[in-house]
Length: 631
Image (cartoon, rainbow, N blue to C red):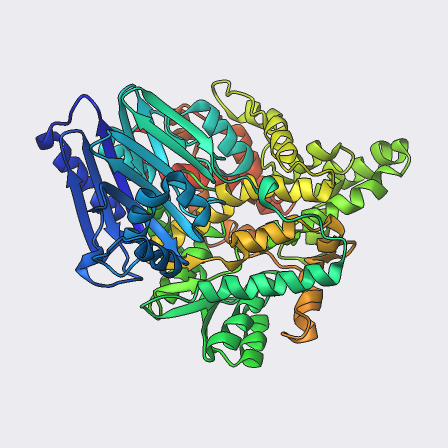
């Protein structure tokens, strides 16, 4: 795994100006690639590339690489590169290295853009042809690896990381008001936006061409166009899924360094570990838990049971509040944008501790979005029953009463109240409104109360509607899954895993996001994946022989931080500093009254306002680390 950054200016580059910028970019990218750091500079192009050596540990695989008529800055892993290499050698290509990077260069020379559908893996790369004066940016199907760009006239900057990109530009970009509104609405900045003005993320499954005549972008991968015909036979779907899943795990075991698996005790990671054990024997597994936390947050006992059943070499990591506090600065430093998913913190600590033992870890990311594992999908099934109740009963009694309920995740009954309150607030809406509501952290009214200056109203419903329509599927569950696969997965879940693992120089691979697995799932009716009280239905049936029955019967647990408890105790000072009225007044972005009321409600146990409070904490930490002028 690697980190990339670069600058292309068809008018010409000043080498004395660009070399210090490369130095700064390489320093920022070092955690992504601690083993090697390289550069390429000519009259119009400057590339920076760090490398975490996974395949071909020799110097022959140093990045950026200039061979086969092109220069490449590359971040990723192409798992089927040995087969592609054999095909290219049969066509007369010769290789100086043994890894996947040179295969990309030779493959582009042989097939051009037709190389992209042949690739199995995760990647973001930039190809430069110094003769044709042409640059291609490409990103993997589902957005595992990041690629940001800044295009102005005849100049293009790019990077795996916003800060590395800005190092190549030579200046930090202003805060983008629309992206700030989206961040506050969701807790993360959705693609293709970035928090910085005029900086964009190349969407998953897209490529862009940049030349002296301009820049154009197009999609190279379309899930709706590549999925198999609709399954009618669930048994056939299950057989195909098992075959594709095992192949996905197998391909992700290729490495010249130690390899392990994140193990939560839930279905997704347990199935990956089981497949690894079948194929390799002894496996190293890793999990985290929280000292003194409620059972709602604790995964260690379930993970230990799975590890014992499979015979893995298991490591359980305990996170105490003092450990979390000690890791906060390093975690926020690893985030190039404001990011309010508090599970980034345990992901950071899990990655850090796992890296002490292995360089690559497999994880269950994507399983929930592909197979319907989140509770909100159950809420979607229940919504039609809720809407069948008389409207007067819903709006006159149930919803007003639900709004009065206290809530707290650390108390089981109050957590049920929180879920009920969230459900009745969204269940009466149409499909697009419900899906938007399940994602939303703050409403437009809340944004207007919070912001000093009026922020653009995020068109979340329109974004969700477009994502659902892109599925080209009349099954509403499949529409919802497709929208999450294209929106929250790359912008929230994969950002969390990429940034936190790369901050610790750990490569994470996700078999559930192998395109063969995703396409198989997309061809299934929604009912194969989701039933009342049963998410991931097809996984439970297809793999029933691989794990103890209790693994499949456990209720869904999110990978969450006990943030409510911590914000009212060990992290209370952190919260108070973030919403300090004097700081907010000086900053000029947020009014202090609303955050203060959130804090009081949280302390009193009336409302779980930990989400919006953490969003402000994360924003302030990003300012402190990366935009001191805004602090």
